[in-house]
Image 1: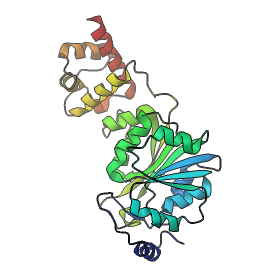
Image 2: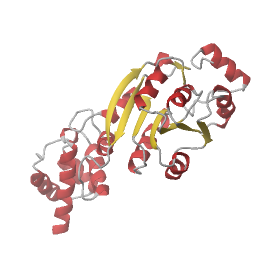
Image 3: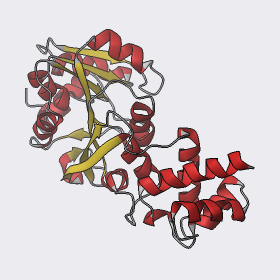
Image 4: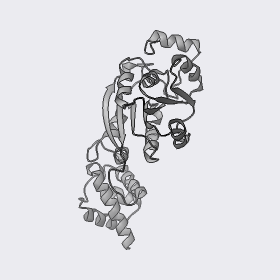
Length: 288
């Protein structure tokens, strides 16, 4: 069964009475080259386990099944379960779980389904949950080696923008804190059925064993980053002062101690400078 053939897709969906849900952002891949590239890029082999989120029609799932030791796919839409039962018939190392990835106990799921296997995530993520899903895996420090995911092209550029680059934002800094991000390849909107209104890209986040910079107080560090990018047209002095409710004198002193010009803007700072500024602010507050 060619799962990228539109005639096959329509036939299977008709047999099961399936209707696309706009609210769930359902678009199935019809470009036969994309999923093999994703499965190869994720680096899975027979000794590894792969967690997939939103298997849809099962195109990527089938490719992962041919490479990985075990594949666990989490699908929210109950009406897709019989479809997957047909399209993945014969893929004995695949387990489909019906559930919401944002509500599942992922640590427990990974532990129970993969045991001591090296585990990675590979998925065509529903675009409306891209950021919360990626950040949950990173912030909770779940035991995964990497995330190879397809996302909206614009989101891919944000996730992978390097700190100190004009395209960098708060989410870019957060991703770079936990992982090494890169854009692998772009996927045009013509690769999907139904065709979406945006282009896509496949990115890979290689999870770091330790955060890329040392922040004494991680919570304070991220509050600082969000405040700095919250009003990115303003200087770091003004955005951090107003965003964190601090006196400008306190922020100015921390900037001077960190060697950061007071007229610098958030996108000009490296992750190391953000960490240093956060640490200096903590020192200033402790000295009072």
